[in-house]
Image: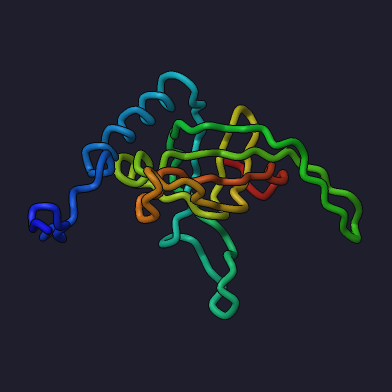
Length: 162
């Protein structure tokens, strides 16, 4: 047998194909352009000010929420229909939407972090963010999430006035 045909372990692994920083930046650039110029809708995002909000000293609940001025954000908004809840007081039926934010655009370019309890204005209706999820990883890389999905329900009158 000749030694020419033997397999040998490389000293270092090969670089990942199409999964580097340049490719992630390219995907960000394409998503930014799609959301801002083609398919995205603009919403006003009202982030809560944790520094200025008055929290109850024992329970940690907000007594009076203070919000920063609204920030215009481009996102993909999907109508989800109505959420119906039955309580001792009766039936509560409110519209709901899902907002898909481009995570890197928000965090890197606008210094904005989506949180539950914040409010958004979509059309003429205020919605409260009730659930957050980060469902998509770019190129299957779990450490590089590219989307923030916010499930929102219509805010009750008097809870938020903008």
